Amino acid sequence: ALCALEPDGSSLRLVGKGEGGAEALAAQLSDDAVFYGLVRRTDQIDKSTTIKFVFLSFIGSALSTMKRAKVSTVKGAVSEVFAPFHAELMSATEPSEVTSATVDALIHEMFGAAKESPADSGASLRVGMREIKISGATPPAARLHSSTHSSAVAAPQALAAPAELKAALSDVRSDASPTDWALCALEPDGSSLRLVGKGEGGAEALAAQLSDDAVFYGLVRRTDQIDKSTTIKFVFLSFIGSALSTMKRAKVSTVKGAVSEVFAPFHAELMSATEPSEVTSATVDALIHEMFGAAKESPADSGASLRVGMREIKISGATPPAARLHSSTHSSAVAAPQALAAPAELKAALSDVRSDASPTDWALCALEP
Image (cartoon, rainbow, N blue to C red; front, top):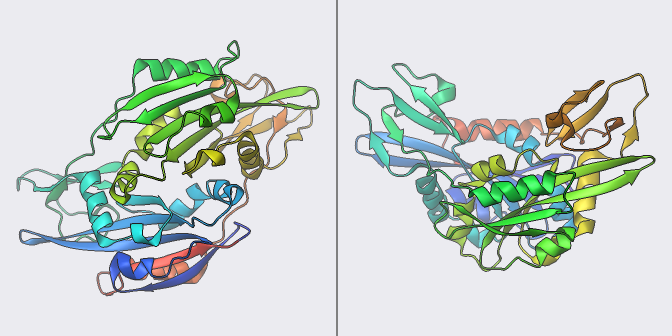
């Protein structure tokens, strides 16, 4: 199934569904829009048939930096529409990246080789990044319409974060430190992170450390003066170098969840930038505004609200550090991001992809402009 994000970013539009897998879906993509899709992959392992669902996001290479930044504000809502899924092909930018070979490599990277479980032990199935224990009869939600329930999958490799990276992130969050950015790189084997640097100068200083042949993750602190209050926002960014191969780009999505946990909590995400020129203070500011809307003063007698990532936290009286994220203002509330509309025909198309009785193995939608 394939859908597109409408230009205003408020709704999805079903593009199509059908047979032919990743290649048939890729034929519907264009470089001037944002698409989301679901692909079903069926494999025969010994005497068992296994089915995996892969969610993909596609950000056309012709989109402006601001439009690319805007996409990250709806990513969580779109993922909920397509959930559950086993793996994600994240932020492809060229149709040539969306192939059955890429999807198969991603599934293998995510789960390792399938392995038969002893008959007397419960098997495990990984749904997204969550592992579910399967024992005896398997509920539909756990098996994701797979006709085999005795095949367990290997857990993805753990991600190692060095102590110096954690210290650098603490420095960025500290009100007593002038440091406002920290950056790390993903090692080529995808097993660990390496601290690249930290310092002052915001997004532009961080961008100067990026290169097109590696994957980077960073945290930027933005400070703004609103009336008599100072507000601080933290923005997590991911950067996938444009010179990386399709397979290496696909591999990145298998560690995204683990990396996000290292950098959490944060207010917003600049997702999958591919050129250093996309990482600027203007882009970060536009992203924060798109994520939260304009800051607004709350009445003195009412509790304010603060959105952390996609979660809204009520602030009343003394505000705990986890809620305020080191912001020195606690009376300024932020507007909730706009809800995302998913058409009924998209939900029907996704159900068709998941149905064992249907030959449909892909569906695609677009984000409205």
